[in-house]
Image (cartoon, rainbow, N blue to C red):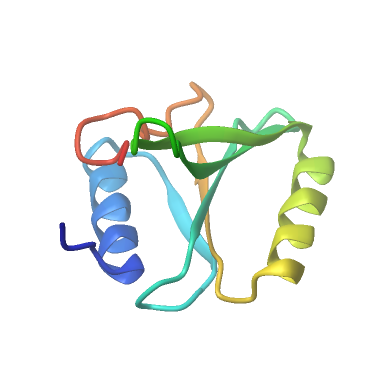
Length: 110
């Protein structure tokens, strides 16, 4: 099955968030073709959650899982460590007091 480029997925995700009036920003531009994507959800109360895609080898399915959750500075530290391991990593920051990230919607979960 053909894979979408990272840039295409990021652009589509940002567009979907704009349709719901959810502010989001690219805070780290990764590799356009094959970079992994990490999404940080900041709820604007000092807390945040970072999500990353995980591939299930048993089922072949892909989905979003929490990488880090807690005080925003600690989540930022976790993201910085991930960027240290993978300079091609994209980081998208979503800011929503309601905690909406849309990663569970059709077309974004995989």
